[in-house]
Image (cartoon, rainbow, N blue to C red; front, top):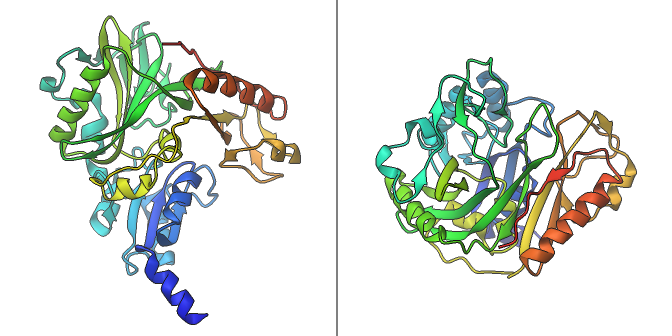
Length: 364
């Protein structure tokens, strides 16, 4: 028995990983294949609020003895605006992907180098003052939480509102030769006045528009310009014959849920980019995040909803506008996927008090 245990430890490539992610389950599942000990901080499921201050984060690190154990860090979300914690992590740990302290320079479109905006690539007009055609965006927004109609905060800028569907492209960057995972359409929650742009999921699409080539060229350009590495996604819209870039996410993000079902070893490729990615399925995938319409207590009927992740516990209290769970959906083509998404949302809404999802789907 001892020799078997000894062998299994040797098979795992890493001893300790600290995973910081809102909705961590999908990342943790993939990491468990080659990491012995996964320590995770998820602000949606941790009551201890380890990320509330640098001191509480340091206490967490100390209690887990993570510096002495030479833990490596994988980051998806949760550190928006927490520059002191980001700097502490950079100073004390190896981080896979982009250095945390570079996020602002890459993702803040205010700072984008004008030479990068060419060949139909544009960014929406940005200003410091509000007008009726603007959206407010906080400088550290993630998942649509800091986006909307907040005209009084000092921590916002205003981006011209671009109508139409929101798309994204997901890829693994390494030097200037990115591996394209696919194109997606993104969804928001329907009729949420507090968070009108709350991210509610996405689906893989056949993006065979004439704009495809421009986007692929641009991905190569910015990968080289910023020395991007690891999993990246870029949100954009098509407007007036241009590609309007909305967000550059230089980190693991929601679309990872789609591509870990489509490709083998996606997490390993995020950590060590440059390898080949093998397809494990030609299906089309979607994920839909269900949010509480009102404060609710989870009851046992929730267990009748199949193929889900980030599932809450029976009896758990979920506050209004917080995520309840994620539906995982698949089909053999884009059209059938859309029908299945609608069916799954409608059946879930009969069981739990959640918002509907604004799908705004268009057939190409």
